[in-house]
Length: 388
Image (cartoon, rainbow, N blue to C red; front, side):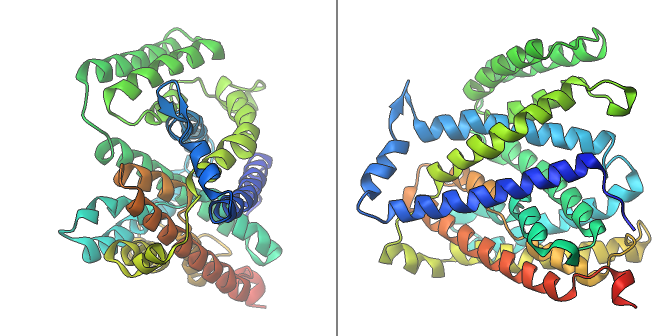
């Protein structure tokens, strides 16, 4: 039986809270966008601030802090978490790859050769906050090992989304700015590895400079957040003192949960539900997104995990059954935050297509979440209990 650490439980509770807040903000934004206040509500996020819209500052600026937190969480998992042991990490890693490949293939089948083909990355993402929020609602019916498995493959999924954004959703490259951003990152790495610099303000200042250079380089500026995370010193808290990485991660959870992600949801989910938008749900783009999230995610995660065990690369954790893995795959179809983020990059500046894609993301994520929660509520008892 898995014994969850205090660090994992704090992370789980934080993500659960984030998921509940995101649901509330999404509902509020959709209601306001479709009310008499709709034009005013949408105009707020398009207001010009220093040459960029408010939503642009949120998506490129504040979300860099969100990506910094993802990087810190990934760093922790790689050093001392479930991903630190190769054999433990292999099953969720292979499952995560399947959960990205299958949705992409399904989307590609529907959109091959069409102008919407650039949206292939939209159904590949998993929203860790919503997935863990759904698990939290199931309580004791979910074995602890399943929570660990979902966190592990969702973190790897986030890494895949970050690589996808960096490689395929960047604009025209400015080599001097890109070289400058990488040079700042290398300098921070050297301060960490060789200079033993422990001062967080130094790294944060370097991160701001790196963000500006990345913004001007054409590579999406949020990537600077992930790069910064791996330059900040990390060591196990068992050594008696908290590392700068630990301190920063702990200090960022509340601002990200209570401010940044709610603002992202409010700024990006105000979709006006008119007849033309609803009819777009039958378009190849929308069908590809929904099918990718609802069908592709669980099929890819289950098949790749089965293949890994059949080859003999890994074993199924204690207290998990294949029914649990299938349920985890269903919850993996909750794309939301990352899917919306990639939608904005894939189809900019095509507001009608962005809104149609967002509605498809909402629909696919809702169906995937309900199916996953219902399935796990039915079969979610630990294997050791089910056999008694």
